[in-house]
Length: 619
Image 1 (tube, rainbow, N blue to C red):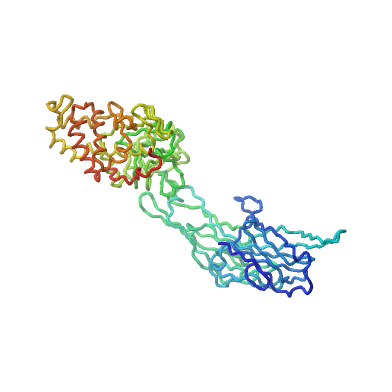
Image 2: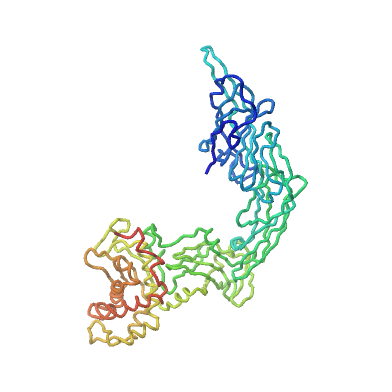
């Protein structure tokens, strides 16, 4: 909250100018007319990252003093600082030549134990800090001294008028900043930092500022530790010229193999000057500088701003284009190298995957698989793209057998025939690895239009939306995992007398036949069924669809599962005369097994997607 006060002389807090005795005659026109001073400030000297244009002040506290020609503070003035307009208005002025002293503060000076005194003369100490402060400043402090003139003239009409010149006030910081910057040969070293601290010692600082803008006082010698991960720049009053800021920087980083590396670097900064940035740059010499393994920590992933697939709002032209959105359930994590030399990882999964090591065998480089990338975590429906280090510089990679392989800088043709291998100790990855017989899934509109509020129904279909596509991924990951579960085989064998084909109950189908049909490679184009005509599911050949309610409730509702398995029976070539549609396989065995064993499946809860609360569902 901005601490603003309309001050009358004698209050002595925020905006009062109060030391000199009041006028001994009646007020003039000038006294009754407020003088408005616009407050601006400049960037740090030499700050190339910011525009040189003036910035309007947005201070938390403002103090001012009006000084006459003798250097004394003028009293009986009223002042008000308006942060919305960055304007300071002063009433009570008379004819004369003056100087306006303004102290602006951004932040809370109480954290710095700062004292602001009601000076009576320009040479007195106005702002002061303890000698034993022993820490960087929390607030920024700005100062200006602006000459201005007040003139009252009476024209031929006998009516007096006032003229005030010099009302544009430009301030500069009375503090300097020490910035700690780092140069990294390998960007993944920076994003793998666990801690970055510096010990600061040796330097002594000024402790006060007079009304005239002169620095006074001397602090004790600084000795402290700062967290460079929390802040890279620290504020101080100007330093004494006879001292320097010196110390040691400690950087601790993780390695993708689970270890830690600690590095120490010394530094020295000659001085801190007002309104100027002193820079300490440290080239980070690190054993991982030559590493060619992409170490994608959570920080590195977040900074990459990588895309996601099948998200609400994704264009129907994209998610129904099989060349852009299609996956096999046995390979939900798709890996490739783009024509631009990027590692491309696309993940068809409602759940994240943690601790992922991507190994690659590059025939033109080495016969072994090399550690190409480590991901702390891959988020659901990730669409990760990032240039390979090997495209930018010579690198060093660890092979699967543990030896180090030197790679020259590569081009895209050198990666021809690359093969990938994925490793993870995440239990979820074990589940996904349990999908031995994958089905290939794409998404189709079948004439519907998801951009219309009612889905643009055509016949028995309406426009599938990304919210439904994500549930399609969840269901088919579970279904193709289920077909290789030992318990699933058991239930088929225990009920083999209830499995019959299109010829009716006498047309017996063996469990081995059913398993072979379920484990057969298949490709489906999945859509959303329009229930307006009484149809809630469609299936056969490459076609599969269910109505919205079934996609929402397949986790726990056996009727929704019955719809799914009824249509899967059609996909497997069975008619309504078989047990695989209106019979035990779909209506009793599979639907109940799916619900009862959900906790053992890859997508074991509806909470990963929370689809029922999604605003893009059809009403």
